[in-house]
Length: 272
Image (cartoon, rainbow, N blue to C red; front, side):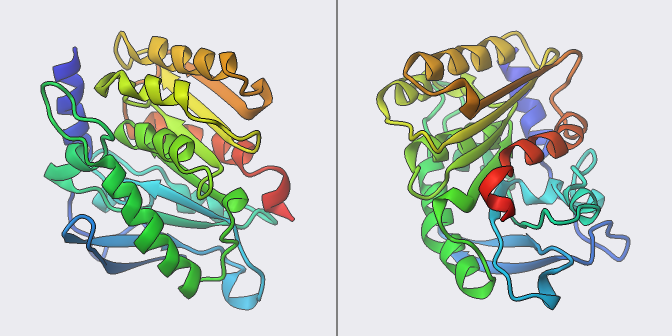
C-alpha cells in the first residue's frame, strides 16, 4: 500500500512547462530565487489580490507547497487547485499566496522532516529554513505583507501536508496556522513524537483534511494526531477536522476543499 502511494506522490507532482495556454490568473507572477540551504534555485509563484496595485494596505500571507499544482493546469500533472480563480471571486478577503515549487525527483527528500526507513529523505527542516530565512524575508521586503506569525499561514497536501504541520508546530514564531491536507504521517512515527513534546500556542490553528479512499492509514493517522493534540491541551476550537467520504489522493480533493479551509483559517484578525 505504501509503495503505491509513493508512486502516486511522484506521478501527481511531475512538472510540465508553462506555455501560452496557461490558465493562471493575471494576478499570478513568478520569479526565481537562490536556495543556498538546498544548493539550488527555486521558482516562486506569487498571487496578489486584485486590490493590491491600487491600495497601500498590507496583507496576510499563505505559503504553499507544490506551486506547480496551485494555479495552472499546464504545470500540474492532473489538474490545478484553482487557488487563483477562487481568490479572484472574493471581496474584502484579500491575501497574498506564495507558492514554492516542488523539487521533482527531490520532492521526497525535500518534504520529509525525517527519513523513511525504505525511501530515505529527511531534509524537510532544511526546506523550512529556506522558507523562513530566504523566501519570507524576500517576500516581506518586496511585497506589502503583515509579517507577524499571526498573519502567516503554511499550507500543503500529501508530503506538503506533513510539512505544513511540521512547520507550524516547530516554528510557531513564524507560522500560526496550517492547512494540513492528506498529510503523509506514515513517513515516520517521529512526527507524533514531535507533536507530543513541543509546546503549541493557543494562537495556533490547524485545518486537517483526508479522504476515505487515500489508503488504510490516512484517516486513522489523521485522527490519531488530532486526538494527540487535544490530549495535550490544544483546544477543539483551534482544530478543524474534515474526512471526505470517497475522497481520493489527488488535486480534485484538495482544490475542491481549499475554499472551506481558507475561510476557516483566515477568519478574525486577518480580515481587519
